Amino acid sequence: MSTDKCDGCGADVPIAGGIGNFWTASPKTTGGMTLEFEDGSEHFLCYACIEQLPDYPSAEDVVALEPSE
Image (cartoon, rainbow, N blue to C red):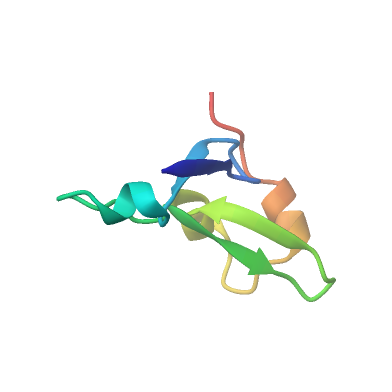
């Protein structure tokens, strides 16, 4: 399973799929998603960061998220 960095907190987020996830008895799920904003920017965020965003987020709200330690 591969990972991608969360644009909010910087954590490594699992990305499901591929042959490694196919042949396992306990498949993993993706831990985030890419959000596209009205300004045309795209940000990959983990679900924990998505929950911190306001109801109508902007790219500035993503920048304001705290990085993980």
